[in-house]
Length: 349
Image 1 (cartoon, rainbow, N blue to C red):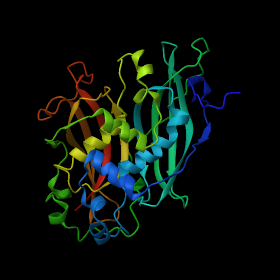
Image 2 (image 1 turned 135 degrees about the vertical axis):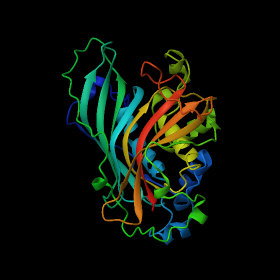
Image 3 (image 1 turned 45 degrees about the horizontal axis):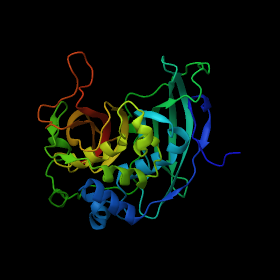
């Protein structure tokens, strides 16, 4: 009997299947420092204990996307070890803040399955929930991933597609207990722009670019204990479509979120992930630029110190984003567009 884990293939998933993922992860200040070294985020709340405490956090919380990656990474050996690609996200809600010293663990439930027409792969939908050591929800989100079949002759299962929300309603946001941004300092945050300064339809070129390095993306993916073969195994990649390793899509999300500080420096907390698509794969050597569009602007129920912005974050490679590239005349993503990410942030009013 083999003692190694080959991972699940498409045929192994069933609707309603619950998977309790192994290896709970204690997040340390070392993880935070490495995350900062990889992406360079500059948001004041996650950078300074004193700043965070001035608005009601007990200390500087872990970057929301670091928490996301840690929760996500737990799911990979069971959900996407044999993935061709991670395809998208929806209905993601961030829960209690995560601090250094907290331990996160993940549980996923299979909510949808659909075999692809080529008979070689299928799409698996899961809802994954991350919790801390006290059982408090850290993150609740949905994703779908294309997974290889073990046996291409195996019959296709009945297609089941989950109903996923197009946008997370403000009533679903989990506002951290004690949060009060009435004394929020824009001088210390590094940006003068508050909720009132943004308008629906506004587009922001984040100006700065960052080149992806082979070592950095592999360090990042190992940091999250993401074991997907497409990111590490060049022998396997030699026989694939691209002939080289793919960069984890979450690496692009974090990089673009860090770049977005230049224009959205007071968007200090991610409240929700509404939708997301990895439009094209990224590879080492690509230089990433980013732009954002304000898709929505709304008040947070019961709060006069906070507002919400629904944002589209777009990553492009090897070119500036000043003309806001996205799709071509046929409505398909341009080949130089890597990410189309729809998320909601909290910002001081």
